[in-house]
Image (cartoon, rainbow, N blue to C red; front, side, top):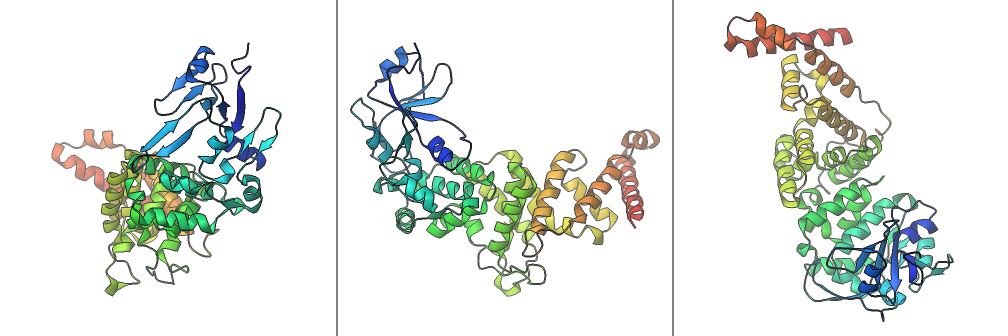
Length: 414
């Protein structure tokens, strides 16, 4: 007997939404009506987690959740009381969901069940909350913003009344109760979409960005020299950069580095604007602040620090002395970690091309630095060490030969 034979089950959520949009579903979740946890276990399902009655199918490993309702009992993400009993209906279960486009179900015959207008909102490309209960869970703000990024190519917009509700949640301090790790989870998933800028724009529209990432929020309205930045506004520039990084790389580290590369411009003294002298150094400290706050993985933090501190030099590589180039390679640890150095070059290319009118321009600086790094790594460090009689002179000798290698490689470019 099939594990689901005799159960009243419905495909729900993202799988239904994506199927109706003509997209491949990332996961398949089911809701079960009229069953108990004991019955699910007797059928061979494996219960996962302790907070919600969710089970894995013994063969397909798809998720099957008992229909449930939720009631807010305390601030924050975990303050809910769950009711999962056989008397909970499909409509009640769908009502607790965040957006109308996620409150759709398919019966086993493929019929769509749409009690809250999700089909119409899919057609109109609208992100709308199902009920006022949306405001009980601040994570829903992040999820909505992430959906805006995921479906940016379809131009989904936030419903006016939903945006008002989100702003009320921010004003009520709900966003302040978010667990840092959950914020990073949603942010990192949004960064991996094709147009991550939409995530941050939606958060900015409702006021959540200023509470979560003030280092990023303060970039909007900050001017840059029009000669180098036709878009002028530093916030607009960073959004162009993060979208360009998404186009150039599938690495989360590169996309996060692109997001953070210019944070220092938000702290530029007003009397020197639109110039931003010293923003790279200030930006490194701000990257540290952000990464500490959200407990961001070290691989993302390290690349973001290197990119924030060095992107200005990378752009000007043709103007730098050979010794300065070697300093750059060593500071970025490019000799020992060439793969990460390559990630930094891609983030810098995204910065260069993430400007109005520059999206299709070449970025020869990256190729130049790749060539110079190869020249430096080709230096026979062991041979130099063996040929140097005084140990204390070895580092100086290696540095001199590496600088010579850079000079020779540059002459080959001329």
